Length: 560
Image (cartoon, rainbow, N blue to C red; front, side, top):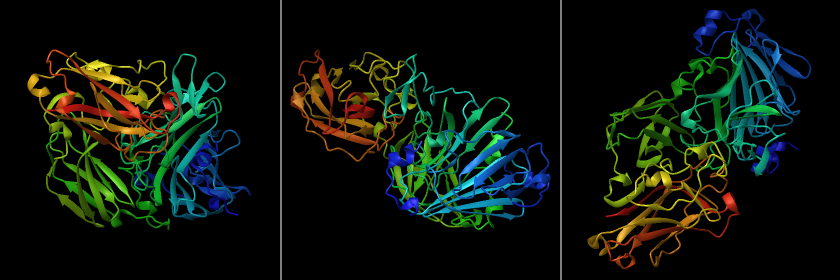
């Protein structure tokens, strides 16, 4: 039976731990990377009985298994880099028995791997030290979509938040979070980057570099601010990942269809050429290859916006586009807010403008092939920061960035030795309140944090609205508030990802604002006395410690 028909769980999938000669000038014209020192005359492939062996005509020779479609060898300048623990490089956790074919079209060699709902493609271009990859997934038979490049141990330095030593470090959570003797924590999850923040990941020794240049993620899910594992390294080997749908901390439904190209490439230690980046990559050479689902430049459109009105100069703005079939985003220009997004598949998209990571405007836009959709200035009317307040803790930006430990949490576990204590009562008006207030609150760790504040007699004579903004939650954790002797009702849990997030480097879920209408009878009538706001996490589920029910804060304020 084909393995794709098995009902695979996320843990099972994720835990299983062209013939001819092309001139040098033609390869350069392709705009796809640096040439190796070897002669392009060697470009071609052969069948060794078990693998298709592809010589790029540069310094890279790679092999693709004829039975599984795994990459079984990546030899750069005669040195083997691929594989560890008896496993090779592949889509998902390996497809198993597959139909694998190879052919050459001009200066391109194309390998096609078919296994049920997944088709994987590899392409080599004459004279380049790159492998171009596409993944076409038709349904949810596999519960995740990733490609992992497995690298032999000892090829590159094991450094960074995503590196650990299993002979020395101790597992502290779920088999994939480690603590070193110095108290720092490490995990493959701790990339510290959002999708919008990077074009490539990889390793270098200074004299040899192995890189994975990401695709445009148009068929991925999670949007521009999604965080996921990008690489790992340890004493057992290293890995580079193209994550397209991981199933962890996901805020969107999975998209299906062709994703790519993404690129695995070698250099002599330097970063990969910017000509490989998805916004720069010339893929016209792929138009005639017959890749299922491929849509070339002529079949795509563009959106161009004049600008944004109502921006806060302290923040970067991003314009996102999403429908059930594709997602895109573009950075808005500082000052004007002008934006442009090219290479979009035809269709109607929800347009969302983000102040940092907070949605402050939504609309709709339709894209047509070969055309530019021009938009007039968009007025931003959804920023909660414009409301008049008595006090505000943090700022409305869709992140916990102003709060204690927030930045560390994108590349470390909450128990990390570098983290400040998670307790953090604050007094409004004392200075540096936000920096003293914990970014996260857990039922079993720091529940019951207090905020002290004074009101004038006039303010205390009226009812006020208290807003508590959150960015994510674990195990349906949500805040219930107590103001002096007044206790709020238990709020309804909003929709949030149902996997780990706060302990795996991500605070990104579905931004939500809890609104509490506090009556005038709740306040202290003596203006010299402090009112006490208490925040408790409520939930009917969750484990213990940092896996108990919890939430991440965006902003808390009391409206005037």
